[in-house]
Amino acid sequence: MMINEVIRNEILKVSQVSGYLWQRGWAERNAGNISLDLSGLAEVDGRDLSTKRYVTHRLPVNAAGKLIFITGTGERLRELVDKPEKTACIIRIDDEAKGYHIVSGGEGNNMFRPTMEFISHLSIHLYNEKVGNGHRCVLHTHPIELIAISHHPFLGHDEQALNKAIWSMLPEARVFIPRGISIAPYEITGSEALANVTIIGLKSRDVVLWSKHGALTTGRDAQEAFDFMDVANKGVLIYLKCLQAGFTPEGLSEEEIKDLETLFNL
Image (cartoon, rainbow, N blue to C red):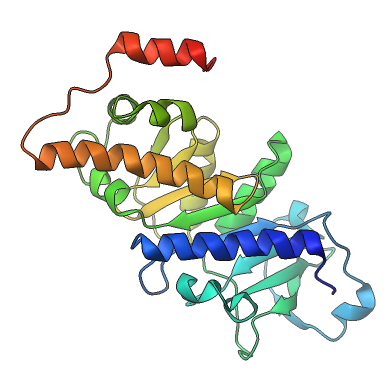
């Protein structure tokens, strides 16, 4: 498979975002994973597949034929910055969704496999395709302050209260994460249950907070997915900084928030 300029640019954005995540301390060891739905951006010649490694894997039927870029299991996102060909791969799901070919990437590792969150990512890509939101990127990482707030005895369990608090911390939070944050109950990593609660959250929110674990966002590309995560975490960071300083933040007033909603048609 020839990686064309469009795909190359999308993977470059993923590499850049991986660097941001590492710099912020959100991607310890092999934490986090990123994927891109490349379907329709390139064609894979059937003759090329005959020479590529095939992995049998039960997959959703409607995933047949999909082309996905995804990070590898056990791989460090910090190495994705300059070694995407070793830490990630492009897979092409076969026409019966009974497995996939690794058509590019995973170099130097004959046992290379996509992240254990592969099925969750794939389910989310299928959901995004169904609703037609144009989101090709799925990003999961471990934002420190978002994880911390999920341990809060009140805000970690009250989605409405959490969003009200975050939106009141700075105007950008209300403007750039207009649908807010969904709180997903703790589920085992890589489980179908985790994928299901994530999709439920994405139906109404911009960010899904995996309680006591991490967070997930989607976007038209890796940069947009990161922006959702970055702004959400900034709102939480300011809130926690105020508590750390010994006071409960005053926040924007309801009138000030309504003015923002009117101005930006939220």
